[in-house]
Length: 423
Image (cartoon, rainbow, N blue to C red; front, side):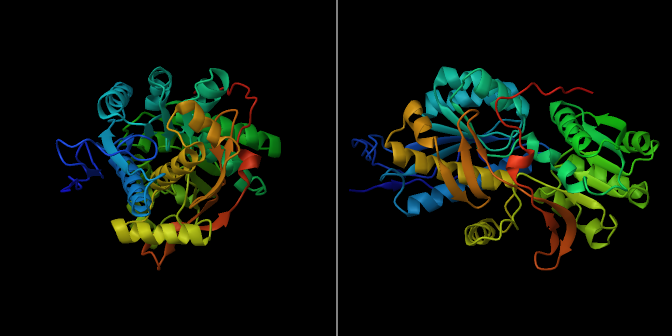
């Protein structure tokens, strides 16, 4: 029988299909699950200054699908994918989810980058009765409120939430000379939550610390000089910064030009371990403009853990895409592998049966062992923080001098008490 092979129609089209389609006019073949293929709907920000995060989501998804299909699929079912740009807008994300489920026929959903998009999607997922594996959006409210409190079981998070950004308190608590802290924060929930979590933890460890200043930068800020000046006027010893992606690069370069690293002892860039940020500050790191004082973390870093699983994943990713994997690539790749394991265990595509199959799951992924926490449907795993250093091997900065703290120490756990956030 003659078949038509669907091919990649362009990484940045609104749709990317990976499938073997039956000949037109013939009855579609079905696999063990009674469908022609398992369809995955994926979305992330794929336009504007944060577009690299959507690109990394897409690259991680494509690689997982290619590898699973090459090994025979899931219970004999091949995987197909459609990717859509959510434009970092809640309304677009909700529209995409509806299209992916009702028109494309997605069995599972993946992404997104924005916490605002994630919170808007939650009630819609319940209405559509489709599981979305969240692979970036960091808001604690997604799992604490929508899952643990409201019981929306269609939400599963594979990536580390904002808890990860508070690891700075564990990294610096034993440095008595760092006593005065300030923040240059993203002027929305992510920035507020990070600062609140850090202060709460640091107060427990170090009653002597002072929180001397806070400057809040709106989304898409390009001139951070007023925020840097305002904070430095309070003579902090350490700075916690939460602008991310290209904004983080701009902030760090402007801080260098304003002499901040001659005056502070440490600067912690919350998601500064992201590949796009490290690439963006490569020249400054190579020239030692941060004087060894720049620290960061991420929701996964490519050089930890030092396991065969992670090393092999990074090698395959570099060979496939000629780049290092960002955390949104790893979390999406792992989310699809988790889907495979849950579907094979449940032998079903039904939401309640797949969720039941996730309970008790412990799965080895490139980021290490992920453990499913039933109360908030959050996969728990550890990501270290480290100093930003130059790597001759990678010809770019990486995180070195790693500080590994078990996620059980610094992640919030159910039952959750409300987190007081605000400016």
